[in-house]
Length: 401
Image (cartoon, rainbow, N blue to C red; front, side):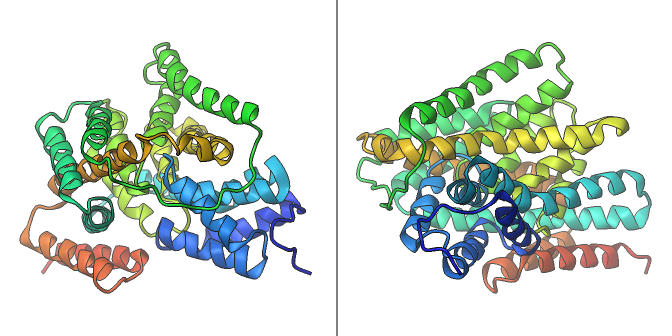
């Protein structure tokens, strides 16, 4: 018999089985993931009510981190406590993480013209996907002239001064701009659900902020070691507002200038990630593996994967209890609106550099990337088919004759 909404009886094994099935079949990005979740958790199993599910979605959309993974984590927490939360995250994340790690290992060993053409096709995929993300996010997050101005200024700032750390400066400027210009914005309403007690919730907040400060200090002990890697991915996970694609400029800014990976290697993995089920944040497993020496690739993939998800999961856990109070701060809606607008500018700047500059070199490349964009935006073709199209087109155009 199916449980009634709100009844918190279940096992971690049960949660893991459902989450693993979702992790194997949930293609299409975070919005599509939430549709799969609603069907699996609300309609089919009735682990929570539609209003409670909407409340979790509303909360996680207002926090940094991967929305779909946070929602799944909180559903698992409600269903089977902390073991259920970990089971939900592991099941949903594991399939694409393993595929990304496997691609990192195979790509480093495969060489030759065919592999180069496939890599170039994945870079063209990145152009199409990021362009579609910028277009969609701009329409939803920049609906008025104030937020359009904030987004444009953030993009110009990054294009003129693309030094490490400028993304954080752009988003801080966006928060200030939102506070000054977006006073009339309203936060979406939702039905809050029961969460941790206040003391435990504030402990989560303190832990997340403490790690954000402590990891960079510990990284100084070994600037190119595992702690430095964890610091980079934790900071990226703590600053990603507006969807998983925003992780692209944050990670590229930290990894490429620092010599961890090359632009080509970075964008190849990002293109491959578009064809994976589950969360886009599993791109971290690929980056951790290609940043490491061969004997440490699995360990570094795990470190990067945990580090990028951890801040969002901590804040989501705390947010279940704290958001109903914090959201009543008068400036909260305006500041969040400004941050989200700046995020659009950050991703727009990344679309030009490095995505366009690294992937586009001929008119054929422009045509292939444009076709991928139209298939995604106008005809809503699944991203995995766009990956296949770009790779096949690149291989065919590179073939002799």
